[in-house]
Length: 112
Image (cartoon, rainbow, N blue to C red; front, side, top):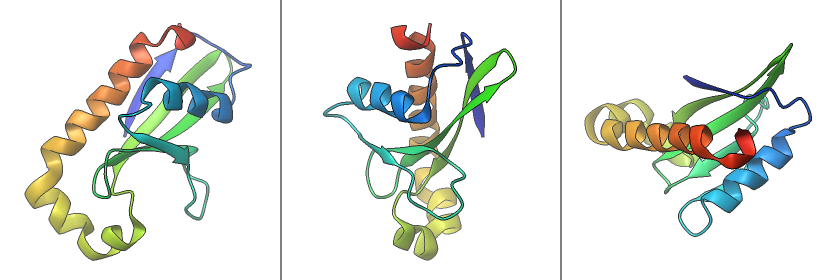
């Protein structure tokens, strides 16, 4: 899991944050509400069916941050290939995607 802390913005909601990501990654990645059970994350940034990042906005006392982790966006593919696919073929793709999301958070004017 990766954590990126931004300037404290207590008014920022997960829905508004998702909109900022949708705008920033428009035409490049799909950004949509997390729809898996448990509500562990708020939204997903999907490169393709195998590579994505799940994001959670955290609001704590005086601190706003994003916690995010690489995922296989397709539940079916997760069940079929999760460990093996990740370990053998896609590790570099996931790291690059996580790094790109972190860079976006650090540079987006809406988060400064």
